[in-house]
View 1 (spheres, rainbow, N blue to C red):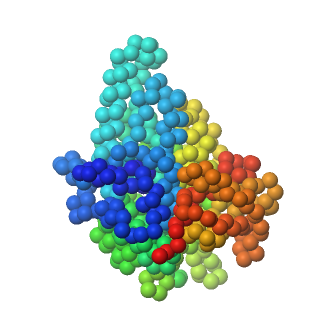
View 2: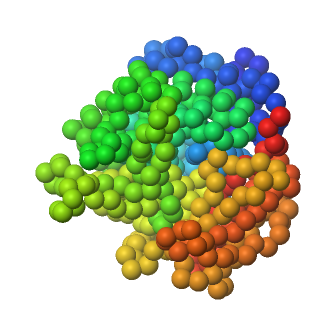
View 3: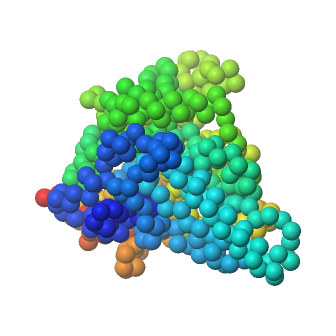
Length: 472
């Protein structure tokens, strides 16, 4: 959801510009319904783009301000990433931003990216060839480096599969929090009508939009994630339809997971930056009336493809892999040997100082200086309400992975005005078996709030929370 979307015929902004779209009190804003995919958009694939590109909605740029969605939570703009890269290349025009219509399928957007990247590389090679001082710096032909966040990593992979010459012209790919195996949170987004949370109008509109979008269904988990007692099953199209999604879109996405399992594709120079230590939904359980709840543990599968079970009871053995709050660790690092781990939340990773340093170093062909996860140190984690909150209602924030809160600060400020809230005090939550610390925050106005956890030992961890007026 990191690209600004606009209605082509009217020029009206549909996404990523007006925060009142999320904080309003009425359900009469029709932009969510305009964002629903029509029949042509639902069926669009790579061949569609080559034959007749879709034009009803267009992406006009990368997100320039913080944004938010229920379950998927906050997303920071990519301004710092682009600016950081433009400072270390020969000229700013060497860096090209790629906004895309994230509502559409990964395959469609992969075709768009392949053409866009090829045109960018050609322009840059021509520019280098025309500058004698640059030619003297070396004889190597310019090549591409991709820096991709979340779904963007899937789009890069699709572009290279569709255009093998693009892969040959690529020196490195950096993926940050990309769900290569999917994300269980996607199912919770499709199941929002069953959440029983507020504001109801926002959840209703987001669920109705998500249920039509190929891009959302392309993020469905392809691993065994549905806890059905003594077995853990993969999702089926019927499961997804029962939980609020679209059967046909789910079938296409899950078939793609199977294809990739059978025919893996390695991107050139691939390095993954992975968020760790954050409480992350990894598997799912179904309650009566097709209500889905997320579980913060995964299940291991042995080399023989069978579930690892407790020897005494035969029950599947649970393991908390954690992750970045949206993508669990195995999904973000699937099949990748060069991995850097950082403490951070999914939507704010692209403004994380360590992530920016890694991307710059890879661009400059320096050693990445990857910090591997220390199994003896859980690391700090931040948990916020993923359905947001309402004015005047207390919001509980949790901090995990700490022995004590000494020297630790937890602050809340407006992400739109910068107004700082009252200092927060951390106290042990006696109801949490993991020893987490908790604090309460009572918002006094509708807004997008930034929560920041600073331990003094690592780069601060941040997350965004949307607070809306009380339901009418």
